Image (cartoon, rainbow, N blue to C red; front, side, top):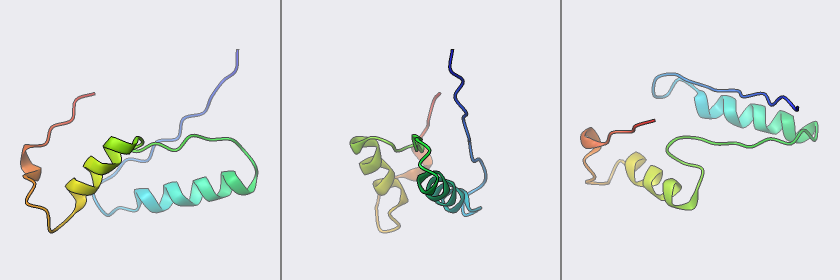
Length: 70
């Protein structure tokens, strides 16, 4: 049975999660270690579109009524 490592970055908005994810992904690529990079919401074409809509400051999308259930 193979064991997979899961690395999860959590924190408040603007705490550097994306920066850390980018740095770790860069390191793993350099070392030729296979990995899967995911983020929520995100990771698929449609969820990336939703993510852009949510994060767009010019959007009139009501961000206070977004709920994510896991």
